[in-house]
Length: 341
Image (cartoon, rainbow, N blue to C red):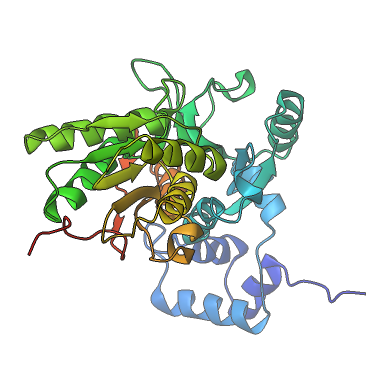
């Protein structure tokens, strides 16, 4: 049998104080309850000697606070790259003395409804509603009126009802433009990937990119349309090169596109960055694996998770959309224009 856990009454008896005094000390309320320093030290010493741990279940029944948060995601929890958001959320929860429960729906609304219902039955204090890809969402009906922070997603509401934390994709586009401009490129700049209206990241990255170039009096010369996967990017870039396109810079809308672009450039006999500089977004593991290593604007997964929980646990914070900066990871795929000093 497991050893019997010490009770609050036993702590009070060993410290020579009342049960309520011991309770106030262990709850950190010794100052407002005017408990002497000597009594406080006796209670703390008794608690340590008895290895006292509070009964959290009893406390939650009494206070209606369980110090638990539920994170409900589509596939973010099982993705080793995006899973950094889980690590950030977990670290913030622990820093605030909370437990983080994690549930994954795989995008199935039936599973989502069941998960949320189960978490509500366990009386969690708040929810983080997370998405693998940045997108617009509708908050499930069961979560309306509850404390919710949206992670990597937003609603279309004009006035936010919940906290929402997303990557600053527009500024990331500006950052990509600045990388190219700082390297001395003024022409032959092409974007690779289809920035469809339905793809939140692509639309915002392309918008920021165009604005950043325009600020320096430059513009994109063309867009090489492709899906956001290596094989589609390879086919599209190779076809463009074979048709006579001579790019100086390819700005790829994600690292998988960049992988396909690398293969196409290599097959066409173009060197990186000697003939063509390549810039990308996401900073996935691919970026460091490629040769030369790929300059990429990083998705701040850990910071997204941390910030979502921080906002959730900040008292009286007004709901707002928070955009988290995306840092530039400068590597070897960007060089000066061919022929420059």
